[in-house]
Length: 477
Ligand SMILES: [Zn+2]
Ligand SMILES: [Zn+2]
Ligand SMILES: [Zn+2]
Ligand SMILES: [Zn+2]
Image (cartoon, rainbow, N blue to C red; front, side, top):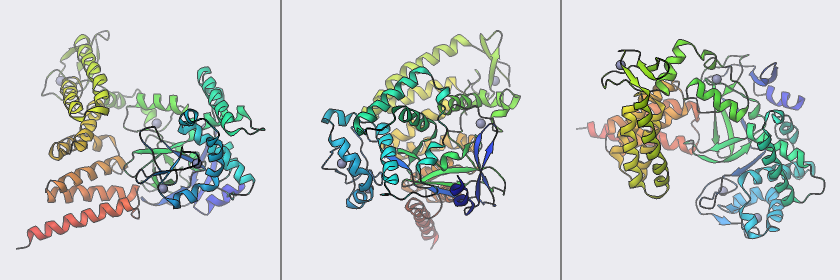
């Protein structure tokens, strides 16, 4: 802990303890938007490989992969990544190679992550891999496990998984109870490693980053550069303020966010947004995000429960919608959604038709700024991008932007990425002026959340330059 404090003090940070929240990371200096507050390599990490989708263990890329010839269970993009992972994989490889082929296939990413945690601990205690102040097993042990709060079924599952790890590693002095507790630690502390466009690639344990607490209106953001976790300030952070990131998608209504945090991270959020639960403006916000639209097509009012919960009433024009009617459309949507999810994996053309039907029904059902409608449109955008129907994809991208602008703060990676998608589509379609506007808005946000040195950002900056050059060329006589 002392080592950690001195390592952090050099970065303008300190660890303090809060009576309810436990450990916190507090700034001892001022940070400006875009500043890197802290970055950390994972203590252990693993790509989220499946039978149909594999990635390099070293860098998580999915192209030009070759199997490890000894265990046939792990992939690499080349000798560089294989070499960088070899100290750890050498032991893992021996353990995996002992298993039957079928058994090896059933080793899930979470089992592998646990194996790698123990292998790393062993290699550090054997001094094969050096320990540092921010990279050692003591920091993992100090993370909350919430063992006393998890239910019986979950405990049984963790015990079974711990047994499997024991079976694979075959270490005589391993403590199965401790492995089970570490599974519980993973559940509330491990981070999903994402690419620059926030698509999940794998899982990693970052014991110092895990000390950073959650807020639904955070001042910082966690992004990944390869496997390195990087926390950047999204707004000015003054000396003495707690550094806060969000563990969840912050777009949800207060009730949804509280539920997700309770279920996944086992705590009750007391951030400024959650403290508004039940207040008038929060009720109104939830009625828009999760609620229904007015019966009158031209009215944009929000609906609240009316007359013994059998109906909803528009708070703007007073029109009443019967619960029966809402129920019927909801069940139609549900029926279609089940089919649509399946078609999403097999047939994009069919999926497009189905999601359009869902959108049509939801337009009758949901508030125009509702998250439900927004999610359908996000899915349609993805489908249309896959189908390369650019003009229509742009239409759907544009439909989501006003909702993004409303639910996210002005600096938020998802808003920046949506401007980026918009700009790319406009550029592709020859709408140069629009592309410049969208790409500029994307750069303004993403240079803060993603920094300016990654290949991803360089690519974006080049695109913007090209668009500007073309616009200048068009203007020249
Ligand atoms: Zn690689
Ligand atoms: Zn191997
Ligand atoms: Zn909150
Ligand atoms: Zn109305």
